[in-house]
Length: 524
Image (tube, rainbow, N blue to C red):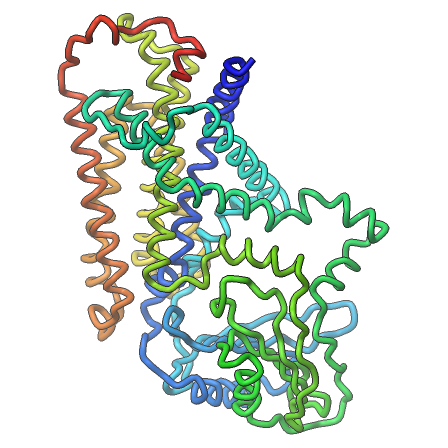
């Protein structure tokens, strides 16, 4: 019975990993890039200067700009600059009519001078973040598919732990230049090394979307009115409507300082002003989510915008909301400093590598059966093509996304959409290339091209960055160095793949000769 249970878990681990493996690789890889989405966005908008400025002075500049250019707006939003996002962002929403939603207009300001910055239009790192859980699909289908993949990933992790009874012993085993054995050892090593991270990141993704995938309790308790649940769990600010009488908005600096005192020095994330220029103007100060691990879904302090009177302080989160916020905060990693953020990034790459090596192992085991004949069945050839396009093709598409940001004219209409189009066009071409070129040649050519594109990013940045900014921004320099390192690694991977393809297979010992594959052989 015990052996039968392990065998069934091996079957579940194998096939769940294969069917969703290509999608999970893309989800994990883009999610890993999202840990540096602010830095990616800054690199893709090099016109935004990175400089140390005072929060209070930036707030005063933002208020002055909005009062001059958006005095008749229905709402203002101000995002103050910080170490990761150097731009001062202001947004205005047009007057809101009953049953309508006013249009939003966003501007980036120089936090030192308050002047508008003519930055190029781009999705930046937000594209990877959104693709990570929406898969560039209409709402809510992308989220459903990504959440289903996360559930399969969680099942694959649990079944993998059950299947490999010597998993921790195998962690210390690595046999280089042994073909499938080396891939299996690498798969076990990266799987065990960051296993707690894998479990946390997968389970927390299910918690984030639990109201979408498991709404039965909400529908039962609230008689099908899900809006009532969200209003109770995440209460709004309840701002007074506009009175129609003019009013003068007070300087917001003292309100922000009072909010900091309420939060014992907590950082300010966003400021929203309702009905500016009206007698019933209100100012809502939201706390930054990077202050602590537990994500606060609605920590806000409200003030009367005309008198500066404190109107409302949001209550402490309930225990269930705090638990959900803990999983959300751990998953997003916004609280992490530079060192911990890099650790998140490395663990994410390890998870991506675990998925990729699993796909390679699955195919390699089945290719052994056809090694003598040299004829690969269509289904195995299809898996090979999907493996190449989903892994090396995706890396190549990311490089193309970065190059498109620099090569498309800054004033080109819909340039942000064409950056995304370039990503998917190159990814699609990698699939065609993998179908035309056989096996290792496709791997080598795609990895080699990706290595060239990534390694050349610093030179591209030097040639195309706005005058006076290239080489003067440490964040841009860090991005360039990371791309250079990625290019070196990809070149090494292409070289190893090329070398392996030209090496002659060594005679196998009798005990290691290919034999008919059974489920028992795969488990052991």
